[in-house]
Amino acid sequence: MADSSKASFRTNSNSGSTTNLLALPANSVNGLTVVTAIIFIVGSICGGGVLAIPQAIVDCGVVGALVVVACGIISAFTGYILGKCWTVLKIRYPEYEDQRMTDPYPTIAFRAGGKVARIATRICIHVTLFGGGTVFLLLIAGNISQLIYDLSPDHKDFSLCYLMPIVTAVLIPIAWLGTPKDFWQIAAVAAATSILAAIFVLACTISAIPEHPSPHHSPPTPSGLFSAFGTILFAFGGASCFPTIQVDMKEPRKFPIAAIIGICVVMSVYLMVGIPGYVIIGDNMEPNVISAIPAGWMSYTVNFLITFHLMMAFIIVMNPVAQEIEGTLNVPDKFCFKRVIIRTLLPASSMFVGVTIPHFNVILSLLGGSTISCTNFIFPPLFYYLLSRQVDPSKAYGPSPSYIRGDESPSELSGTRYVRELYVSHEWIQINIPLLRKVILFIIMSIGVVGGVISTYFSVASLVNGESGFTVPCYLNASVGNPSDG
Image (cartoon, rainbow, N blue to C red; front, top):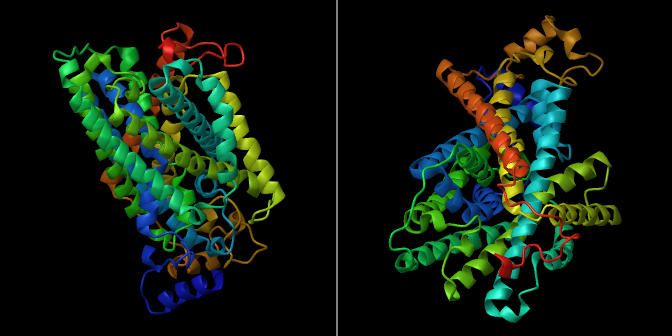
C-alpha cells in the first residue's frame, strides 16, 4: 500500500498537478463507512450526556443552552481539524498505510510537537477514556439499582456497590472484541438506544408539567457554572476516540465530515432533553435525569435504553486504551490469551476506581475540565497549527518519511537539494492556514485553557468543601448509592 501511495504522488508531480487530500488512498476495503463512523461518534458519547446535560443546563441558567451549542460547534470544528491532521500525516508518511496504528492520536501529537506532546496526549487520552469508562460503569450500576428499587422496593438494599462487579463481569467478554470495524453493530445499538432514550426523556419531562406548575430557576453560581461547563465538555468528549475510528475507515479522508455530522446529531439530542428539563423541572433537576422524571413505564424504558447504551459505549471508549496497551506490549492483532488478559484487567481496574469514588458527577466534572479540555479543545487546533509550520521533512519530528533515504535524519536533510526537490514535487503536502482560521484556532485553545483550568478548580473545590456530596468508597460502606437513601 505504501508503494502505491508513493507512486500516486509522483504521478501527480509529473503531470504538474498539486497533491491534495483527495489523493489519499483508501485504508481498508472492509473498513468503516462515513455512516458507520457517524454511528460510532454518536454511540460513544451521547448516552452519558443525555443523563447529565439537563442538570448542567440548569446549573448554567438561562445561558445553559447557548453553552451547549457553543461547545458543540467547537467540538465539531476541532473534530474536523483532528481528522485533517491524520489525513495529512498519511500523505506525508505513506508507510502508515502498512503499519498497525494502535495510537493514532499520540502519533499526531509526536509528529506535530515531539515526545513531550506525545506523552501529554497519551496521558490525557488514557485518563479521559479510562475515567469515562468508570463513569459509564457507575451509571449502569446506578440505573439498574434504581430500576430494581422502583419495581421492587423490597430489594432497596441492592445498591450499585453490589452491581458494579456483576456489570463488569458481563462486559469483560464483549471487551475482548478487536477494533471498531469488528463491532460496528455495537455502535449502532448504542446510537439507536441513546436517541430513543432522549425521545422518551422528552416525553417524560413533558408529562411532569403538572408536578412542577411553577418551577424555580435559581441564578447560577460561579462554582455551579464552571462545574457545569466541565460536565458539558465531558458530554462532547469523544475526540480521544476519533483517530481510532478514522484509522478503521475505508476512506479516512472523509472522517472530518463524519465528525461534523456526528457532533451535530449529539448536540441536537442534548438540546432536546436539556431545554425542556430546564424550563419544566428547573431546580428540581437531578444529576441523573432519570431520578428527576416521574416514575412509570416511560421512565423505566428510559432507564433500560440508557443502561443498554452505556454498556455498549463502555466497550467503545475502552477499546482505544486497550489497543494502545497492546501495541506497546507487541500483542498480536488477533484474538489471543494476551488480549484476554489485558482486556480483562482494564475493566476490572475501572471497576475498582468506580467503587472507590462511587459518584459519577464528581469524576465527570473533573474529567471535563481537565483532560477533555485538552483532547477536545486544545490539542487538535494546536497540532494542526504546528503541522502547518512544517514546510518540509527537516522541520518535522521523528523519522523521515519512507521515500527519503533511511540513513538521513530530518536535521541532516535541512536545506539539501533533495528536500527542496521533494517539496517542489509535492511529495510533502503543506497546510496553508488563512489568518482568520489561525485566529479561530487560538481563540478555541484559549477557551479550552481558561475554561478548563477554572472548571477543574471549582470541581476540586467542591470535593474539598463537601459540596459535591462525596462519600466513602463502596468497600467501606456497601450501601453507597442505595436509591432508598436518595
